[in-house]
Picture 1: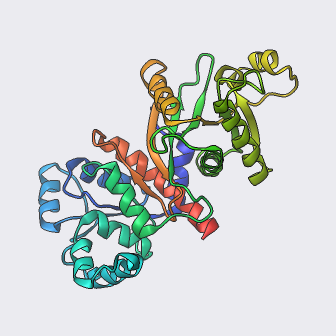
Picture 2 (picture 1 turned 45 degrees about the vertical axis):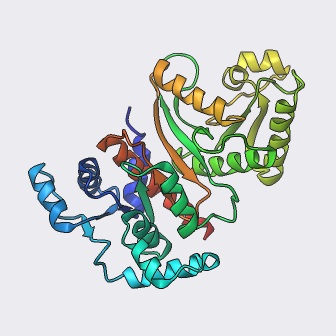
Length: 336
């Protein structure tokens, strides 16, 4: 299932500069060519230019408009090493060691973003999620507005049948294992902000639980209830439903029955799960039994967008991630 067309249009209008550090991977080459052909972003790939272009020719790929940078010979290496020395001051990193690190494509890519030479990075086709996140936090840094790095999936559902229809956001399904109430509220606020950018509509947040507005009593319910209160305090402009069971969140007749409330009912487009168990299971059920497409995990809470890929990703997955990352660069323009 493809991304909504408005995300592609938004990406084209944004014209962000996205760096792909895994330039020797054929899927990354294909995605770079396709994203450039679609004018989704200005793409830079990292790696040996001769080897990359030779491989592209063998695959009949056109990389004429793609910038290829060798991270071991780039004229920016010394500048990036100095940046690393400053960001790693507590570790007392020497310039020589910093320079050796800058030669690593994933480090070089993050330095490009931190230095303003790229607006975002998409990595993970061959690099572990741990490495992607570790370098993002150390080099690009956390966004002070959201003092927690978390993630969400952009879920694409078909428009037929009952239940969720169209694109929605699920969080956190990939990173934060057991958030407390404050962390859960932070995840919800960050996800709602991304929903504003990606869904092109006002976010409506469902804070999910096994209780609907006090129907059960348990410490896990209390956590979601407290997180809901904190979210409303932080973002009084948001439409928030919670704590709420999933069926009550999406079906007006169930919500009316369980909550005893009538009136206008708008279905949520942001679903916040109480822990990683629930979120991870839910998005995979949606993928495998409801035919939904899950794009992500998309990171949030970083100063600038650094996004992760599954190592089993396809070139199309990377292109879609590039489009989402490009749209996310607007967040930095609003807050930084």
